[in-house]
Image (cartoon, rainbow, N blue to C red; front, side, top):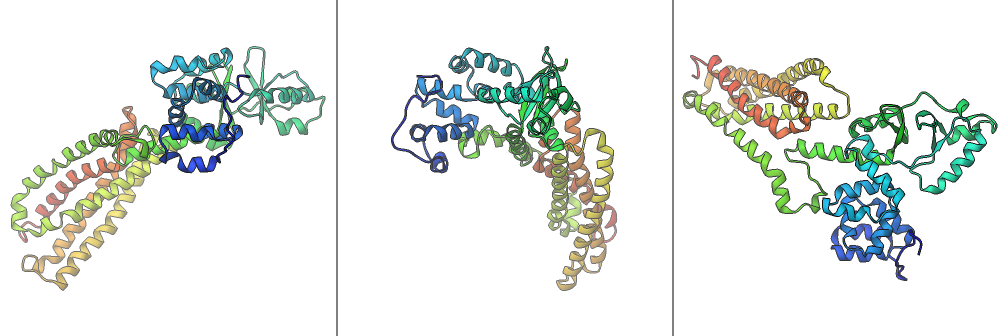
Length: 447
């Protein structure tokens, strides 16, 4: 049996689409049985589409011969991902399933951090020499195409020390004259990424240059591998999912939502909920310090939700926009002053709009349903509500915009400036702004 000959073939066949639809509903044994019923071509495609965690789970239900087959069917970078997902005590066992060449390639990849360009790259790429003719290069690429390369669209031109000199596409080779040298048709204006570049930055490079693959080089210019766009799509999805989960006020989940146990889900969410709950407790001393004013004008108590909701919502909006802008590279720490100016203007205008609504609401309600407490002071109370909303919304907007940048400045993930956290901070300070304005402007009238 050859090393990539599938160890078991069944007469009954199952379509990959049917198995994919039922996958989440099956237990481990049923998944393995269904996977064995796929024909070899569909099985290889299906296996490569599985998440690393699903691949690892499936491995546990396969026989040693099947594990060996599917481990060797994976590209080195996918093998490295699988090993990083596996428990430490299982890694040597899985690594031993590979042949010596693949094992060496995988060990090289495992030396890099998982979220660095080196950890994402594949070491199997097409290479040509600069002194080859175009015809020789095409023949050489054709031979390499049988070696399970990551992509064949680009040939990377390397010198004898494996330094990257240029890149040539298949289109360039087919369009050039057969006797021309590769060095005369290659592109030397290279887009490349250093091996230690963070995966988010690599993703931005792909978005900026619209390429299907990027070469990865070390500090001396030696080529180490390539990162392909299909790999970076998974990274972008993973990073976006992680940021969204953090923005929602939770720790990032380590697995698909339906695969996280209830206990793990509680652990991921309880920490932030406890912090936010304790934070909201600080509203009590603020309210208590203005107890006298609330007794004299109980209408101030009824209007508290109107005030703090505007500030919390505005802050949540600002933090979400700034966090996403930072994730996309549209806003950097150096841009903090520009962001502050923009949010000062936006917060002021938003506050004026909401403040006007709040003021008109007080005046209109008092006109339709007059009360003895407010009476002739409706316009003044409306002005207090309007001014309070302007102040709270402006403060919430600034807090939401600056908090992610402050966190980044001190080395924390900006996504930790979640919308619930910003809303909690603004609730506390918003109440102080509200009652301070009310105490000052309503002195001698309602107070």
